[in-house]
Image 1: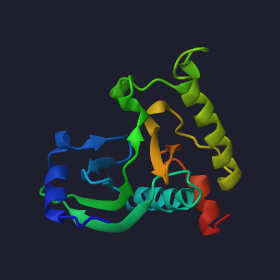
Image 2 (image 1 turned 90 degrees about the vertical axis):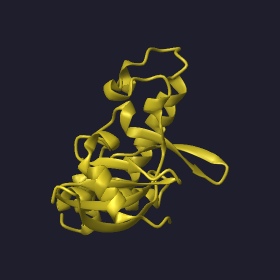
Image 3 (image 1 turned 135 degrees about the vertical axis):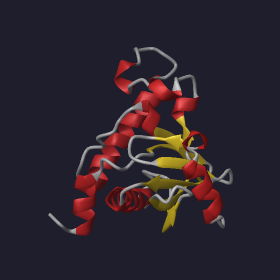
Length: 171
């Protein structure tokens, strides 16, 4: 796992246009196969980290690294965790900011293999977690490599609260 310079990360978080952003976190690609998910809420970071870590044990998510907190140059606190970077589908012919849903792909299109692999992995996700993957759109899927095999996996785990509850034995 790479070393990180927390001051450089704080600088990127301070200037939002330099980081990718989802609804629940900012993502910073470190350019070495690893990135950082940064949340403004400790619970969001916890849910994401714990559920992604468990899913990764079953090749259903990118691996995760350490968790840490930092303060950006505006004085705002961030709750962060390292993540293996996946090759996102959104970069393969889709509009990154307006990702289409898999269900909108027409039959016989070249993207059919994406839908089939995604459907197989949604079933595996349910088998492993006992819950549905709730944030299912093409912008939240990417490929990871395990050995010589590329696997399509979800990359956003903030809406996996029911899986978190199961893992933590809170039910």
